[in-house]
Image (tube, helix red, strand yellow):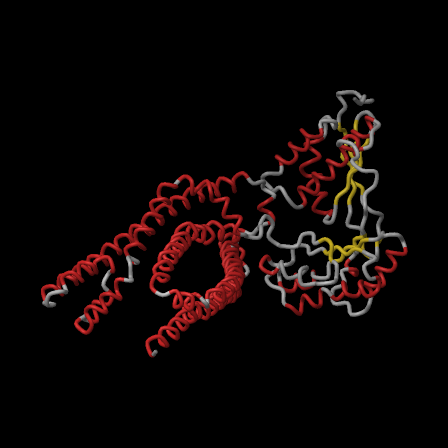
Length: 538
């Protein structure tokens, strides 16, 4: 328990702003900081600081915060913080407003520490370790090593090691990020960005740790390129890598988050699997009877009877002991048509049930998504583009619905059909079955590779869609500015560039799928034709 040495009714009497000495420079640049001193009626003062736009921050402090704080108790830090933060809601919770609040908050804690005779870390819960490892941030801008061809990075690393510092942070990709506006990064950009890192390793080897700062300048779909593709360079930290906070790398495991929605409509899911099973049973009903039909009917069998549903072949064989009349052919044709109709109805029921359930799951998921957005702090929306949110609320939701409907339906359909067909094929001819299955390990590898590439293309498409959405939203919100400065033509031209880029990304995905899918059909079909053709000719 600490004893406060000032009265409980202590009041704030003055907010003083302190500026750097006129002409003072650090590394050849003007000092962007501003200090805030909070005075009390009992003589204790607290000091806080903020940067880098002191003109904006001083306007917030003088214009809004000072009048809110004068006469208040400086020891009620949490209440004052809440009042300042809430008071800025009309103007926004980020930028100069939040930096000004931070400076005041630091000063209030300084007062509390002086009043209690305790260091601030003790008031915040005490220390958890005796010492903390430090690293050197390569400030200012001449140390970002953008477009530097000499060995400055290696030279600096040696100086840091000589002074006892064993870790350094660089940001060599900022120039690329600003040049490309965070939209993309090329392999040559990566090579240039990693050059200072290579210089450091050449100069001091692994004696110093390297942290890499990106300042959110790398686009999401390219974020995986930077550090993983730097083998042997030993990049230890990658703070603020991506320019879209809150987005996680998607994995199959993330589908488990959909479990509550699936459980809610488990009856529909079970019914869909029933339709899948019965549909495939109708399609694959003892095809071995076809051999008996061909042997028994010989040339009397019309070509159309080859596609007869196997379930009805027993009836066909019994009647074909007598002469094959037109009436019987019509009867068998109607049976075949009826079987096809039953299969079609079952297939329709399968898709209707699962797609209807998926639509309802999407509805509940969309509501939960909107509710979640309303609960996020306002600061979240300062860092994420509106277009990204729009893309997630539209195309991403549609993709989830497709996973819950078509993907689940097709996957279960394929698995059940494969099992049933495999049993029938093994009963007919084991050797022919093995030959037909021979290409499938190759197909598995191709499908895995296709999945990786399609995912990357889909991410690029989503990013392009989000960029277009952001552009539209910005123009709608700022339509008066666009008209006032006659920017219509340039905005339309820029949107057309984004639009063509979006179209090209879709075309790239289509080219990829149109190449792979015929290959998937060609490999097993060619193996089957070759083996069956050899058997027939033999």
